[in-house]
Length: 262
Image 1 (tube, rainbow, N blue to C red):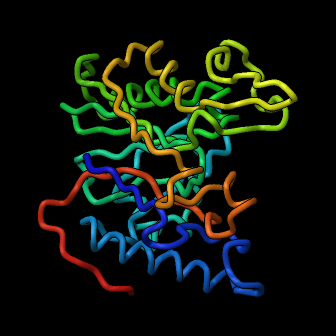
Image 2: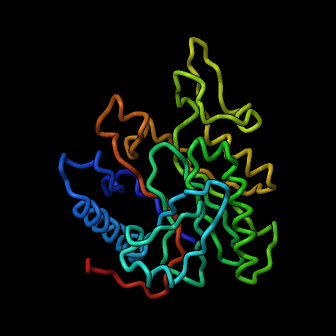
């Protein structure tokens, strides 16, 4: 499994109008994002047309296993298909298909079965961490493997937490999305004067540990302070931080060939 992590090196990896000049058309934004994905893919070893993003409409841990049928339905990837589920699953049986998310300060979490070649990918905002999506990503991997007729072994499971906001991420009130005290008791610190620090990485790590996933790798980069990443929080004071990083995973094709824009 190979991790995709653009930081800000390919420019903004999102089509939101707020990241483009005024009156830029949706068609232009869609084509611009596709061009960036193709450039990224040629550098990293995948077809930029085969990048998919989950809409996460359900928020209860639903999952979708990506395969060649998705590529046939959506030859240009994410913009041509709606995937309502929360978690995307990629496998080495369908190499070259990327599950990713465009994020700023929230982590993308991945849970992998190294032996079977299956990885579940999920974007975890504070609200989704509150709903236990990191733990549910572990469950999604196990259910997907059952769907695929695979046996599961705890010893083969590992997790990854991407770059995200560091432990000094500040809110000027207690966040309304933090409704489950058990999730945040060690990860939201009251600094006084109405200031709270959010350690979202710690909250995710605790869910993995509680689900028995001990092999957890983390990219210890703070998107708020790093010059190599976009950050929603930092963008209020620094407009150059406005944008989205693309983070995800795929299984490489053995004989990948660079692609051109169709």
